[in-house]
Image 1 (cartoon, one colour):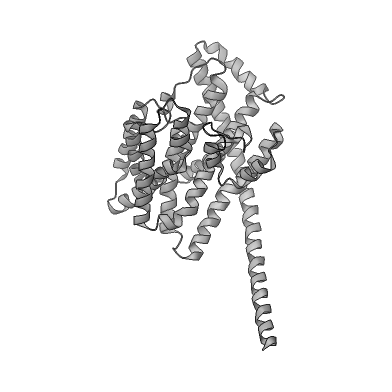
Image 2 (cartoon, helix red, strand yellow):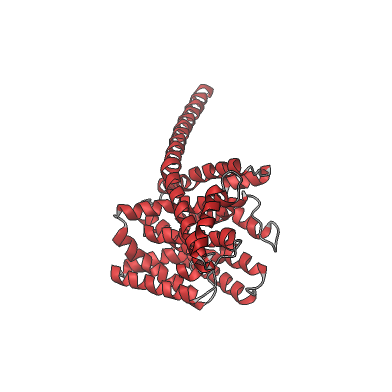
Length: 376
């Protein structure tokens, strides 16, 4: 499972390396190398994985009461925010970019940034609430919105089915009515949460179906292969036509069996842990390698070392692999040196704040009780 998540993060990085590096150099990279799981498509597949994993932990780890829900929110908070705040600060320091107070508030809290992408400058997309290297962070807002509603939606089959049906209808309407050549097509089919909620819920339903009708490891791998073939057969970089939608369904149904077979593997767990730091830092790594003065020497050396390979395709493949390897190495360092300690520090601060809050509440209740006794 961890390898699948890392592959999806590499697919996201593939799209950005192509857009930010190889295209500018006149080199060629072929999305078929990653089964066309590049650009928008891996993000939507990430939503499926998230829906499956959140469905699993809500069912197996967190009870349906208030305490269980609060513990779930705490775990999601610690998963997303500590590393995000550090990367946001590093990006602003290293690139010298500054945000307006309003944009900084949105960037810090993340909530609502996905809606700003679609509507702040409609019909054009807008990512100015983030440093330019971290524009992909709007997807975290979509994740957080799903986390916020998940304890209530995923524990009600009727509500989950209703929202899935509404989201599917929104998506079908957009794909049918808005031409792909229109800039509004991406806004409504990719950035618009009601059109992508179905992907989260598909992961949830896949867990439920496979729990009732288990699919073995071999069958799960076969479904994953079919998903890859279907994805490879559709050139669009999002989920647009019938093959890519069928690929998503096969992918979702493959997840439970693969998760069951790999959940105890430490290497798979470690690879999965690299996904989030790679997702957040790869564009910043690309910028440091190729765009910023005094930090672009390694990037320039990589470009020179690719020239003996001759053809634009060979040079593009070499440069893509080299940059991706560096991005993964940076993500590994960030995970060990920054993410784990940052999460630990924020967890301690959160625990202390909650403890002091409980003490204050008890004090206020005792003060209120004493005051009532005196008045009597």
